Amino acid sequence: MNHKWLVCLVIIFFLTTVVSVGYIGYTIFFVSENEVTDGKSDDNDTELDINSRLVQSLYHKVVLDDDTYYKYFMYEDLDSYVVSDASSSSKLTLAYNNLYAMDIRTLSSDTSDLSNLPRTNKISGLNYSYVLDTEEFNNGFHSYYTISFIPFTKINNSYRDLFGNDAVIDKSVPIKTDYYNGRYYIYNEALDGYVPYITEGGGTSGTYFTGKITKALKRDGQILIYEYVEEIPVNDGIEVRNPSTYVYTFQLDDDGYTFVSRKKK
Image (tube, rainbow, N blue to C red; front, side, top):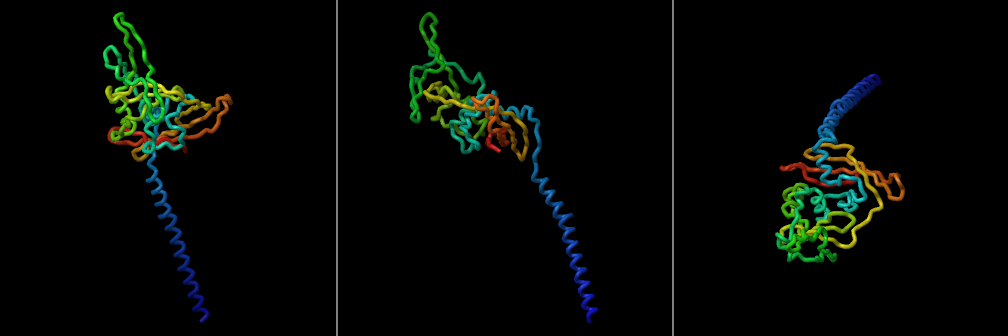
């Protein structure tokens, strides 16, 4: 009787061992293999040359070329800037920074009717004065003046190139062109374009910003550009403070890549 129980115990132990070994083998050779395969299939990143024309052109669409105190002023000090939630003012500034010199034209009172341009504008509680970029001339017969002028079609093309063909400009929002001097362009319906104004104020920055691309990836119809940013306080010489990395995301659509976001990593 004891012998039969011993045999049964040996058989049970043997079967248990076989099942355990089989399970371990399945886990190692099948489950683990599938996990690795799934990881590879989810990792569609392709590293891009950071000096390529594509990467450089996208980056310089959304960052000012030079290292300055106001290099990122259009992002309104946000660590997470998402275009779909961004202010119209910030997006118009980005579009303005992508205009070509030839897009900003000159209108002359000698050849265009500028008599109805308001000398002042009040928008959202701010007073804007029409004094920027005006010049007085005298051709020997009569005096006239010129102003810089941005046709709506030019800023609209730039805006859609950045944010997609469905993007719509809010014409009631002035275009802020710099950080310090309170310079703006305001839409004029009669001219169907933007004319220059200035308002009091502006801003100052106590921090100098530098930035450079460190990596660029292509992933599932998107391009991600990684930028290393250093903030250098004015009074501390070359001491670096708050180094950080930002990721710019661009989405491929039918006409190219549109800007999606700038986020601190």
